[in-house]
Image (cartoon, rainbow, N blue to C red; front, side):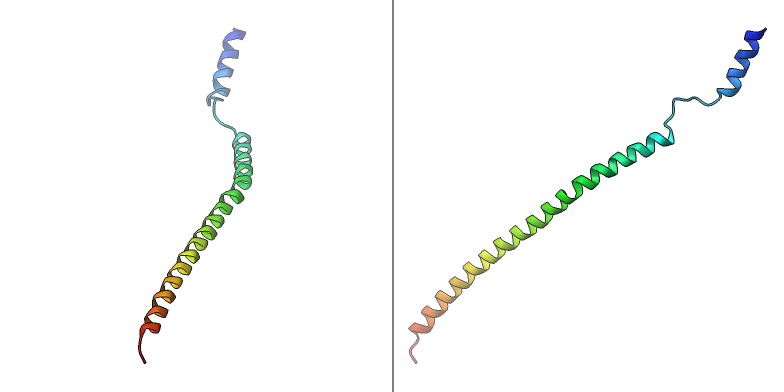
Length: 83
């Protein structure tokens, strides 16, 4: 008889399974994720800054070449003109 009552109590108190995720586990996972993001974000954002500066350097070099070509063709045209 004592075993039957014990089994009934277990059923009453064990309605919800304990195989779920606890709040503490979720908080630990979120803390670890935020730590990893905090460490990785500056490097990731720094790579964007470097890419932009390299693109600007390439554009400046292209502009320099275009200006040299313009000056050389314009100077040749002006020197060949008779006033």
